[in-house]
Image (tube, rainbow, N blue to C red; front, side, top):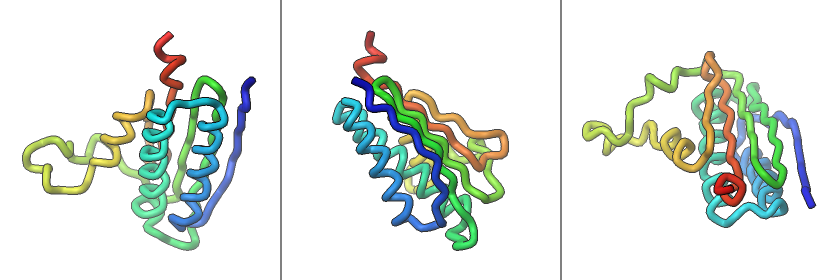
Length: 141
């Protein structure tokens, strides 16, 4: 039986608020029977997307919000995270696997999101990211 859940929420630029939303989404994944591996990957990707929106997008500005629209059902998760910042171009972020960037922290979060999600898509303005994860058992069929 599907326990589909969907929610739109706006939170202040506060990582503690972001963690609350992240846990709601994780609970929905668990209720819908996602594997431990899928849940682990989703937790990392969600934390990256939400924290990036708060810190990099909104610059921790308490007057700006992060808007999150998420939906989870028995076959997939879809989360859109939008900040009120100027955005960025993902192709301008250095590749963290290049030798000259191995010691630098930038770009690792994007790489992690792409590794764990089925789809990661940025808006043209770069202030919104969509994360999609098709449940592993469903993807294997």
